[in-house]
Amino acid sequence: MSSLFRRLWTVKKGFSNKGSDKQKFPWCSSYQPHKHKKARLFSIFFKAFPFMHRQSFEKGSRQRPVPFLTISAVYWAVFTIFLKLKNDFLWEVYWRMNRVYNFSAGPSMLPLEVLEKAQKEFVCYGQSGMSVMEMSHRSNDFEQILYHAENTLRELMDIPKNYKILFLQGGGSTQFAMIPMNLMGKNHKADYVKTGQWASKAIEEAQRYGQVHVVASSEDTLFDRIPPLDASQFDKEADYFYITLNNTIYGTRYTTLPQTGAVPLVGDMSSSILSEEIDITKFGLLYAGAQKNLGPAGVTLVIIREDLMGHAMDITPTMLRYDIHAKNHSLYNTPPTYGIYFMGLVFDWIKEQGGIKAMQKRNEQKANLLYDFLDQSRLFRGTVVKKDRSLMNIPFVLPTKELDAKFIAQAHSKGFVNLKGHRTVGGMRASIYNAMPLEGVKALVEWMEIFEKENQ
Image 1 (cartoon, rainbow, N blue to C red):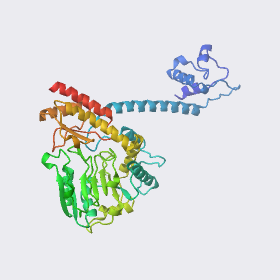
Image 2 (cartoon, rainbow, N blue to C red; image 1 turned 120 degrees about the vertical axis):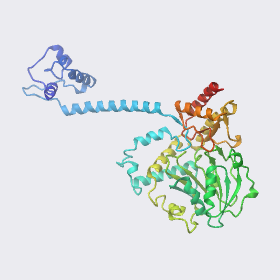
Image 3 (tube, rainbow, N blue to C red; image 1 turned 30 degrees about the horizontal axis):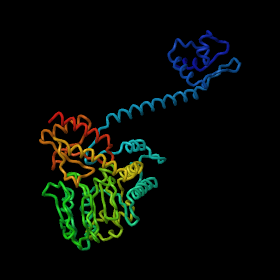
Image 4 (cartoon, one colour; image 1 turned 90 degrees about the horizontal axis):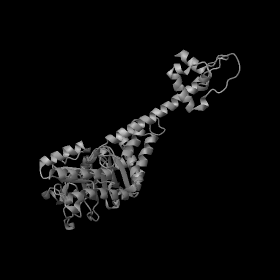
């Protein structure tokens, strides 16, 4: 090998080959190119990069080597860039071709652009020299990530300054206890509306800390609607009024908010946050688990009005006090750093899409496309009263459980996954959160049309 490179990179004065060889390889007059494939490879390279040719040499009897390190460095740099571009392109094609339409209720589909950006920054974030997963939550880099996420959300939702944004842990289920512990300390009473499984669990937990009044319920119709609310049944001495804005399992949502007067309205918006415009000032507290519309599981977002903090029951653990987390800017303990970083990317993505108003328009278009098909179908049937239909979670059924199972299996083979309905409802459920593209819903409807023709 060393002999080959000496012959490639050196020229001896007075030694010559045939003229044809000199013309082909002016950089190496002592070498016959037809004898070595590597020489032809280098020839192609030098033709592509003529500035690397050794066009002339000084007269003298000593060997004068061409700058080997310079040439080899340029060659391998170009070759490496070519391989990287080729591999990135092939990987992106493979990745995109193998991505499915994920209709999971949560954890759910995430925006592809956000996933790709997180992938690029995974090993080294910015100029930090480390992954976000490795950062100290007390570092300047992470504090900037945290403040960026908070400020972007405040801008998106038009959140006033007298509301605190908290990034907590424990999921929505921890909020079932945290809310009464912090807000039910005055009169020990609260109003709840029972519209599904999560509202039922919230009621059960709140009953441990005070008197719970169920204002209305749709349990008698298997939670297929939002029950009518009679304001005369509202308790004016209640410490708060609790609703679940969107019911993930049963596919219902509030289209109008209850007027609770001086009683703070508390809302679970886990499966619909950032999907439609909402006036945050109508609420005293709003919370959402991240795993549906905000990012990966592990972060619970709480937006709370300042005057509602600082009144926790004496039995409230320090970690479950809103005022403690607010005073420490969500850094009382080690927060879910990567989840917060990812949420910030999602907030940026929504902003790039045109904000919540644009997202709502797109979500309405997606939901209407699927609902219109269900309304005219002779085989598929929606399960929710029309006026209360969710934009995010759309349950539907077929005439028999056998057909349900057949549809779910065939849909999975077509790339439509996680369509199986909740075990308490059965049938199917398409969760079409912000990240689900319109093309995904169109493709699903087209497949449903084919299935209907084949199974009527």
